[in-house]
Length: 88
Image 1 (cartoon, rainbow, N blue to C red):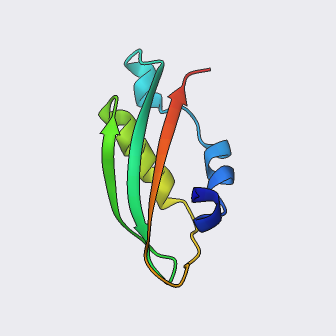
Image 2 (cartoon, helix red, strand yellow):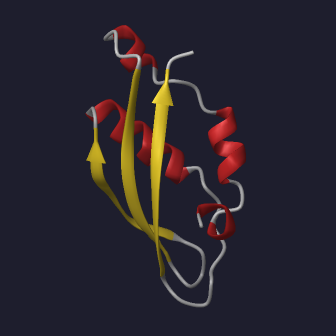
């Protein structure tokens, strides 16, 4: 689970705002499925977009993942997360 490997993920997600670029383009919701590796030492590498309803959400998800502080699990771990976006 993301919260186990990257324990600050709920804080990062809670502080994130809906992408301004999406608002400007009239997009009200979307998602991006992401995958990355957390190394044995806790570094994030090889961030990949598996799918996205719009490139805006993929770019924003990459930025969010970059804000995660992850904890090494003694070996490389593949993490997958779907980021949902909805203008509120």
